[in-house]
Length: 441
Image 1 (cartoon, rainbow, N blue to C red):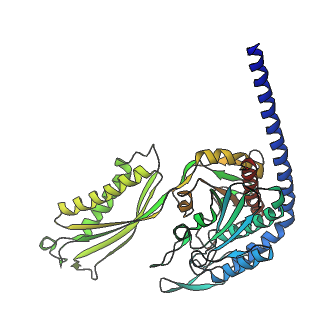
Image 2 (cartoon, rainbow, N blue to C red):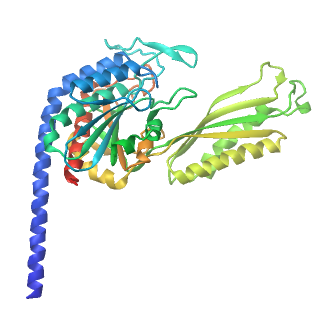
Image 3 (spheres, helix red, strand yellow):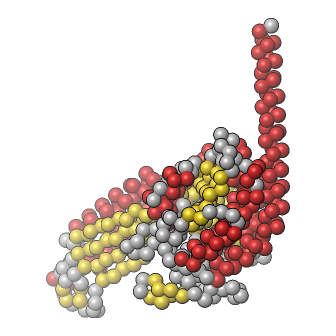
């Protein structure tokens, strides 16, 4: 009899669980259908928003007009705007008035010192000053589309307020490309100023348009998705002498050349590349003033990219060791400074698994792809270091552009097909709505 009671009890629990799952699926399907309709209806407005921001880009920590426009659009949607973060940051809160988690949704808003040459009618003609030079300014990484897609999501989710629970924080973040020298900015400053604590953000979601991925497609990777980005600066000090008598001095240029080649063997011979990728690149060398004078010192600098924290620490140590010992072997000295930059952009595996069905719903079957890690870097990583987060890539490449022919990001010819933005709007809304509905308390 006891076994029958237990069996019946188990069957009842299974039936109840199955009914709850069916009820949740019905609710989710209904919300998805509504979001789909609203995304189609607002798409023309999203495109207009994007074109405005594309035509009038601003550099990092100088996004004054951009922030004003974002604030005005949000206020027109009925939001109260918070302008207290990171100099030019814009934040808005959707509070459903019902218990539940708080989700952060982020878009970056800054442009780049790139002169645009795309043949579009709303191409940027803006200029500014960067490192003391007059430069063109362009949204050459798609941040204009990020703003527009998040504004679209803010509009749709506000309309769905009565059907949702919890809170959504819309974060328009400046200076993703890096604050000017001597300034703080970006996600790191927002975290430092207490954004997450002020709003009680539990999880963060973000996306990046990608010019090399077909429109309608989303790519993601669980775990380490984008690399950390650190800088190194090495000064080699030797002994100045006449170029005709190198034996009378210590040549810091020759020593620097040996160090640079030695740094490459850290990656090719001392790093476990089957575990994760890593890169050391030298991007600048400066030494000497005249062809027949061996100078007193030489300086060079570069970037370090890692996808594993342990490997990052080891590579830092090996750079210092390689530079100082090669210099010492030549009778010179090497001073090494490593500046830690953006952390690894890490997608929480459990949260990633949870949002995959929502992303697939946004793209349709067959258009959600698992990607390889990239050695590019993103300051969304500062948010992901604080709370569980997921970051994905939304396709912006026209379908008739062959793979490999799309202009890269950060170039004058960078181009985004605006037909891809509706997928990003839906992805933000589906992920947000589904997560809130699955976590009512």
